[in-house]
Length: 294
Length: 318
Image 1: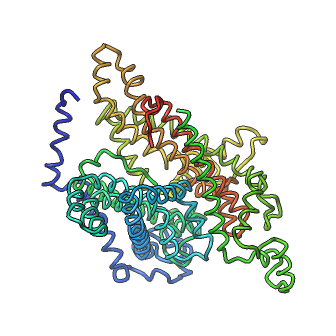
Image 2 (image 1 turned 60 degrees about the vertical axis):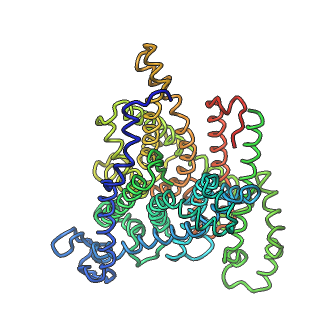
Image 3 (image 1 turned 90 degrees about the horizontal axis):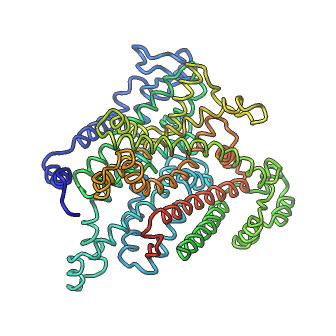
């Protein structure tokens, strides 16, 4: 490139600035996530009503002073259910992402570092898994056993192993050519040392960014599976399940579906903002990549 | 280029075969005993055993796979035990209806998404640009099934313009058909529009800053030509890949949307076959989806190669 325009020059300077000041997205996103997390953890203490007590006389009440978000078809308090359900969504998102990281990162490291046949086998395997849409892969895994919450989390985690492995591989491929890895090799360090003490610490930034974004995909996928009846089972107050059950009453009692819907959007937006903010802070090179939904 | 096309073709075939093995492996773990499903829960054991032998359920899994796969290769997916109909035509009808739904949505997503992305990039920081940014966040954060609730609530509940669910075939008249398909299409478009426009926007912005755009402007070309012929053509490359991935996402989205709107397509059939443990339908359906997805990826790769001279002129690309 001949001459850098002022635009590009200022872009090049931005990472330095971002280092000193936390990006707005990160602050806003982290606040949203922390508030939801706190509400979820304190749910049993702050929920105004028991989340699973059926009250026939209080069915389909619109939001009012006693029931801030109204009641559902069994007369259960929607707000209390929402608060308790937040735990499930967060649990799903975090567990599934942890699984995909725990399995995907070693696979990616191995593929990127050893290259050759190992790389070929692992990545073709990932390609095969990636060629089934996530929700169908989830359905397929869940079809085998009777639905349960933890199985959904495992299925969602399984679905996101290949993308994590791919990302780790591409980061590893680039890092393996760096001088400090050559130096470690020359020192005669063991392969395990190079992989986990030299490459992994340097690969963290993009992996953390991707992982945090994956949490939101995982929450959405788990909710979709629950929505289809393959995740949490009644009387659980999982948000996806709540929306699914509320569908029949959408005309007369829309608040039962809208409350968990908006709650989920807020949570996912929060997690996404955190991911974008982390990207901004940790890895300026990645800033221009666009997060796909998937 | 020929070598490249061949390699991609072989790989697509490999993916479909591997997926078929994966599907078969997972579904053979299904705890539901097929023989009991057919004969009823209280069937005498000898009868169950006889049927198991007849259906070949006692053979080793690879033998069963081979039997299933070689029949599937010539289009025979067996007979659905629960619906008592051959699977192939049933899945075929369903996938056609899904293809119509997905096709219409895809066209809207591609045209509107790219259009909005270009507008946002050209009028950077204008109202369209900010709208696209906000919409992107909503698009990522709002799950399809919640969009569907919103659409039903607004257009079926509040305005009463559209039916809340259901499907009418085309022979009942075009308008009846169209009336029922608007809501699911709208939901799919809302749910998938955002990231196409966001990606187009960012690659357009990059293209607009490149030397060849400056050169085109310096030549005195009208801005319209610069944007559409020079910048957009190059910016389309990443968008095409994403659009192909979108086909896969649409297939996934369809599972949810069809269930919500009771649209008798492949997605609803798949969910139904899982709930009723209808193995053969499940296998055929998921295999078809994977095949469609593999084809979409193949098409995207080839289109990408065709549009990208670096690949077209035979430089090797993995």
